Length: 499
Image (cartoon, rainbow, N blue to C red):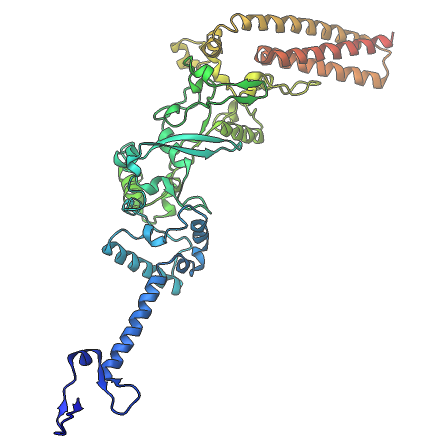
């Protein structure tokens, strides 16, 4: 209130706007207005509001997320990802005011846990499909049809995988409704929301037959086509189209390229759950997948044993087999303990190793990474006999013709004859050398030791070719037998020195 200028002494009412803003007239001061108590209260509320608004805005920025030290790895992964220009909240909060408020509440809860030291060592966050497909982000992803996804290989190359989001997101896969984060996950440390092939392999290959009859959902070429370009092998240039155009299936050459069964062990449940009634749900897969995959973001690899796929997984399995003492080519993780020596000879001949005095000389098929079962397709026993003693698969020319046509017609018989002729000659020279060395009484101790070593080398190579079926690698078998003949001749010459 101010005094009336007419001199009547009656106070002049303040205008409404001054009362609302908490201002009064100030007589004789430099400033014409001064705040009332209501004005001071408004000022405090305004400053507090601006501060809270600024903090709220800052708390929506990625830099705020790293305030908690345990978030630093995730921040760095985001900072190096393709989403580095997108605020965390655009993904982690669902679209709309309700989604933002619920997200802020959850974030506040996490902040309280961090301050009170009640947080876990691994943050858990879920991203809904509506966040991924909001306007301006990936809203057209399901309409794009098949896209090409380039994946680096362990050998330094790249392979192109064809993928269609529509059936994976809009249809059930194996009776399960997938979400974006079912495949785009955070299971690889240092990478942010990347697709890991482990999830693909689990869906496409679990509970199917592998080994001799590779099976995958959709088949090999539903995901990747044969290489279009020539591939340089140790045996020369190779073009897949020459063979696939004849109807040759991928598994005719590239068998045994899937390892692991993707099983879930019951004890895995106890990693997260501590109540017996929860673990009883182990035998209810539909419920488990709806709860863990559809309703919540639980990584498939958290429960399932890994399935590996690729040409290089066979090599990894071979290395593990070597460590177990089994032959790398034929041993498996489940059968090597009983049958580790059954096919060691053929495997060594095929891979061009094991002979003495001969450099490693893998067969062309081995260099091309063709598995044994690509040639051994013909059943040896009748179905009734196989039920009792098991089935053995033998090689035949028909298997060759599947890939090579009639180019090698009659070759197997010729190879067998070639190896057998040289084997007979090597055995003859070895037998003669052995008799002469045993009969040579005048050999010095040093010469006898040398002769016995020569005979041992010759016997080893003969045995390897004979039991390993030299036809698996004719050139290597020929070289090994030639060395056997040479060592036998050297032993004969030593025995003749004593006469």
